[in-house]
Image (cartoon, rainbow, N blue to C red; front, top):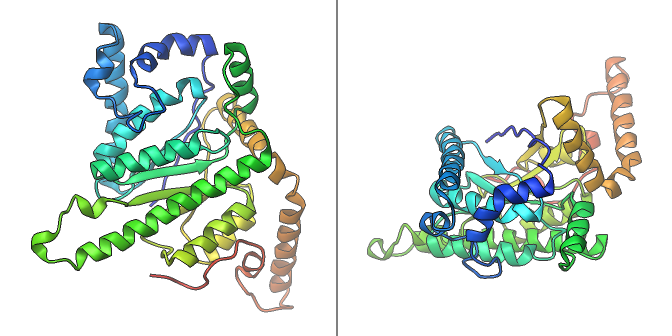
Length: 340
């Protein structure tokens, strides 16, 4: 599997986005129900004008066309998250694409921002829907990067603050959400194994997907990555073929990525590309999102310095080469060796 994701263009001003999205948002059911994103096209179109309905149909067709290519080419398509005032519409479109294309494996991933208080409920709701309807849930878990905008908007609209009160609460939410999906993956694998041993006349192909899930642990936080790796070992989930992936931005926390790779986890380097005017705001948001990690960058500098010295020593014939030595001693813990 591989993927390349371009950062989205800067979002339109809040008022402009409201004007564009409000017809669709107003047509969606309340977000606190289990079926909060399961509105049908008929439900949506009934609340839109003819022109708005045409726009909605084009958006869906474009997303589903891209998802179809991803499914055929056996790559993953990750739908990014945005501010809460447009997220319900994104959830609706992403989950419809999941239901169409995640029939046998995770193809389309929706993104969940764990600095939001309601994220655990949304993940539980969406995994429940996938289990009920018989398709594979897939989520990319991030912390989130719109804290200032979200709180300003909540204050302006007189709404409760949607963000966790402190950084530790966000870390706790992230780790708990990742753990819940990893346990879902383990449970799904156990149920699929039990089903495969049942008599042929009792086997239900639809039921085989009940409990199946995929997760992208997109984090630069070494503790969160370590906890996820340790839980994988505890649950007996294999490093390959189970739909569990790790990801970091290229050039950020490479010691984590290389260490995961050295231990045979499936890990990706996320590569933003595009015009500088569009990429820079994206990178600045990532720097803000990972500000606590950036303060600890001295560790990565030390790791890179040690590796540079090792390579120089190898070049000069002073020591034998030991590939990945630096990364094996400076990364997340987890079960070692190759797991089929």
